[in-house]
Length: 64
Image 1 (tube, rainbow, N blue to C red):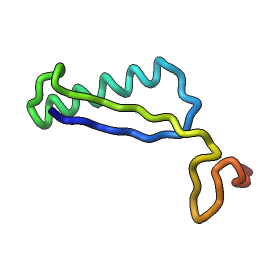
Image 2: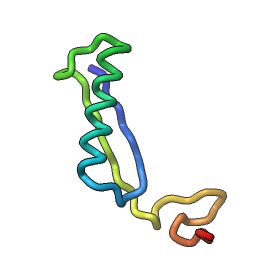
Image 3: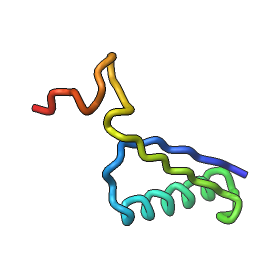
């Protein structure tokens, strides 16, 4: 049973998440031959204050 876990910054709408889960499932089914009912996709939203790059929180980065 393939389990795919995706961590991403919060803010994406439910339709994008549905499409992502659908396409990932289709790809895993195609590549690994797993039946869709055996494929698990876990989407984890992270707050912008819980992610950093080079020691700087994403919420503190200069976005310009």
